[in-house]
Image 1 (tube, rainbow, N blue to C red):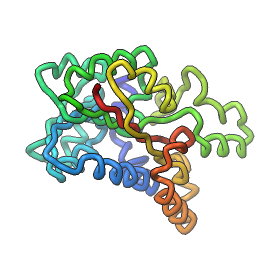
Image 2: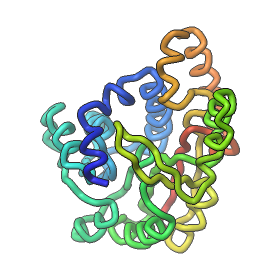
Image 3: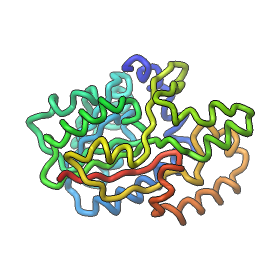
Length: 259
């Protein structure tokens, strides 16, 4: 898996972070996070930090951030963006962060845009079992995950005459292309995550991310239709608190609190 994401590091910002769709989805995430974390400083552990975009955003708002990723190239890219004194970028496997940082306590563990979708259900269950050990009392997980029932994806593949692809997220495992590499990907609806985490966490809320805003692979199409895209962004903002739409969106934000 490390090699797959190493290959993506040099182009990830261009193909997602800095795209219209990437920015629009991230803005919705940030609206929710700003509301949830209204009183910094807090100690945040970010997993699957990628090129550091979110870690830098947190740092600028007064949070103490330890940001991790399995990819050494992603970490190198994150470090090259700036040299913020309160961010520590560390290469770490999500399956081992609880052991690697066992001497620390965090108020929040944050994972954006499908980082947890790289884990099987068994691995996720173990992650939830172990991560509570490095969370403070009533500490929170703020997770942005890809669900099974994304309406955009079904519509896209059906219109392209690829009916089987339209339901790929409902399979036990799907294979996503990451800059030419094939990455096993596992999709989870909010109820799936609740079931896997219930022993140590309670669900506080879930919110749709990308119900009207499309998936990033539609960037070339909507780049040519800026007015339509802006209309979709406006509609997204109107429904951003409709939890029932979470499993039908491109992603959803889920907040879990340690019991």
